[in-house]
Amino acid sequence: MPSSTGQIDVAIVGAGIGGSSLAIVLARQGLSVLMLEKSAQHKDVVRGEWLAPWGVSEANDLNLTALYMSSGAHRPTRHISYSEFASAEESEAQTLHIESAAQENPLCLGHPKTCNLLNDEAVRLGVVFHRGITALKVTPGMPPRLEYVFAGEAKTLDPRWIVGADGRNGVVARQIGCNQQKDAEHHLFSGMLVEEAQGWPEDLQVIATEGEANVLAFPQGDGKVRIYLGWSSQERGLLIGPGGPQRFLDAWRLSCVPHAEAIANAQPISPCIAYPNADSWVDHPVRDGVVLIGDAAGRNDPIIGQGLSITHRDVKYVSSALVERSTWAPSMFDDYVTERKERMSRLRTVARLTSLRESAFGQDGKALRRSIHERISANPDLAAPFSAGFVGPHNLPEEVFSPEFTTQVVGSPIWDEHP
Ligand SMILES: Cc1cc2nc3c(=O)[nH]c(=O)nc-3n(C[C@H](O)[C@H](O)[C@H](O)COP(=O)(O)OP(=O)(O)OC[C@H]3O[C@@H](n4cnc5c(N)ncnc54)[C@H](O)[C@@H]3O)c2cc1C
Image (cartoon, rainbow, N blue to C red):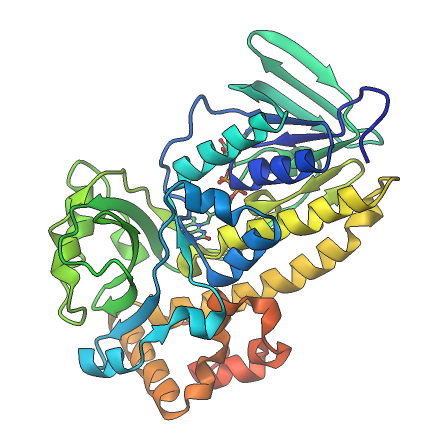
């Protein structure tokens, strides 16, 4: 319920996909919203551009999919996992027709473009947007306190609630005393946007590992493809320097993917920034007057491309709590906290399994990848946890994420020190 005193209902820190989609949903319900962003413009710093099928269902629930489509979002319909341990024909025989398996096709749209689209829509709905802010300080309380500098002027506000949506490098979690924990790095991961990928089928997304490269491709239409690369932490400098983009493309000179040349010969149109592959989480993303969403509340390892879907589901839970209750207290987020903890734990398991199956490098790593491939070929039911990335972790039975199940997939406990 909107405040009748002129006080801001909700101040949101961060105008990325999480912050601005929440601003839209709350503004549609008549709440007064202030949105703060530190950057002068959204740049390509390598973030998610593939919204999983279950994330599209979340976007449908938030009434955002039509907005994405109006801005040229692209919807691949087929998924193929190629492998150096199988012929292309064998891999293609396992083609996933995504909509029939997961109810929706995924949705691909550039990250800066999506942020700008959502920012504009929020402003159109009456959200006050202060961009280029500095010196942010959030203090929990009932009400909480928000301090920042905008256009040279120091501001101090006491909104009814503050949402921290300031992403993986944000400061709100730390300022409100949330402990961030993270997994050890397993390998490195990066993304790059390319154009003129002549011959790449526009309806086809692909994942493959061959030798020391785990590659992923998600077409965006008009010859553009968002490609990702996972590689060994031993090769830290692989993408550093002016030759980095070319070395990224060269990693696509693979024999197991029939159309790989189309990517290897494409033109880079973005930077490529390396990230360590690891999950990170906070103990409890709620304090008096403050709640965290999206990457600020803890992020999943990007190897399975779930961050945008997670963020849309966070927005659904948090907006429902704020809209449905007239008296606001931290306990209104109890369902969100419980559901998110289980959701992130399941996705952490899937990301770990995927890292071992796709991004274990070196001789021992290749032997491990081969053994996982053989186990799943012999018993296709063992592939069940991997489908969480398409259908959503909440739509699968709990047991497929259990240590007993995952040990069958890998042949040993997944959190031991694997190669
Ligand atoms: C390499 C890589 C590949 C990925 N691929 C995928 C994928 O294919 N699919 C997928 O679903 N997810 C993917 N992700 C994850 C996805 O990008 C994130 O989960 C998602 O962007 C989180 O959205 P967010 O709004 O929480 O954070 P962000 O998108 O990081 O937005 C945070 C915003 O807050 C602003 N901000 C930061 N600090 C402050 C401050 N102090 N004051 C005000 N504003 C601030 C930032 O400038 C930014 O605009 C990937 C991530 C990486 C790193």
